[in-house]
Image 1 (cartoon, rainbow over the protein chains, first blue to last red):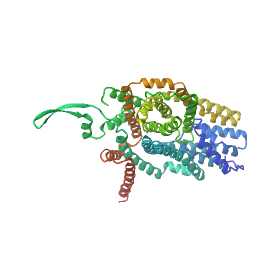
Image 2 (cartoon, helix red, strand yellow):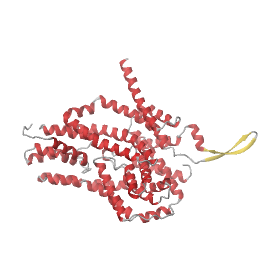
Image 3 (cartoon, chains in turn yellow, cyan):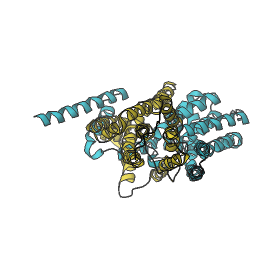
Image 4 (cartoon, rainbow over the protein chains, first blue to last red):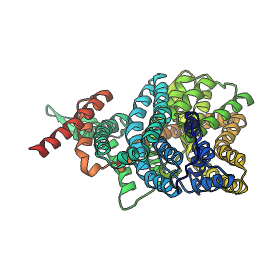
Length: 278
Length: 257
């Protein structure tokens, strides 16, 4: 039931919500309800204003202590929209269904944009600068962090607040997002295709063999580096095989966890080096 | 490696422990990259006085960690702690050559990152205490208590990094240094090979999360651009952007035709 009390939520209250969310959201992350306490505590300044009695505030906080988990920068849009709904005196169920309905899709979009597309591209640039001894790699990562951790959160919070539930739903279901992810996927795959040989270029074999060849009627012995033979077949063949092997261990019939694959690669690389084939 | 540099004192150990605490908590919020290996390594480099080494160790660990993301709160190797310990101990073996000091640093960093997953799971298990505490405070109407629980929630995360880093730097510097001097050449070579192979996992993880079956030609084009034409990374990114534009251009052209 909508309550029509004089809630007078101020701009200052909203900033308090945003700042709490931005700087502390996952501090109380836990296995049981993940980001629930962070959400409840962040939105508390609004709840304190709109709930007249202590009993109402209690019930309202308990509602917000239910399971919640999403991508933190994207989730700023959710808490912005939730703040708008709470301010309008929407029913608890409406706020809950907004949260539950959006946390999954936005987590998927946020993880894709962050972990699969932008972080690897920026990360490789930053790493190549860092490996060259340049502090530019450090600053690039800091800027990247400020973009996601501060910029995206501020933008999405106010978007979510001003347009209420609508905008957030549009973003999750709309075609603009689909086009953006496809473009980013193509860009990402092209770059990864080049990064595999460039980053793994140090993975070569020191193997050699001796063959007898006939030069102008005389038999001479010649040392042939296996790596040269492989390079003629396909440059960077060994790096490609390692990525293919790791991919197969993750996605093939084995379905290994990343940590298991990590250990397997350590054993193969370490052993390969000991017996002199890597 | 022959020259013994004086091991770290309790002051450095405290500062590095504090840095580990701040960096891991900032991973929870405000998510501003302090926990990324490059940043963690560079700051450690500033503290121990070897920035190029911190950048190199961090950069290598950054590449290894590509594609590793804590999806749904999964535990992944702790490259943050790895970068701090790898840089700090690599600096002890520094004799003017970043490459060899980095190899030494990685012999510490990679095992440390793997061992730390155990502590990560342990720390995360403790965090449940705080949400139950918050439930109780709400029930009692003590809203300050709720605030307290939320703020204290960071302790298991911060302490599971700060304590091992502090102890390793303070107590372990001497023993770790002696251990590193004892490490034979072939072992260091094998570790260095391992370090150069591990980024393959980062790429494989990344690819396993992308629709490779549908868009594999772009992967091949990227490979050819580098392997045969030696196009640098910026060129790859520009080519990728052009290909994406082309893809939609042709797709929309088809639709309107």
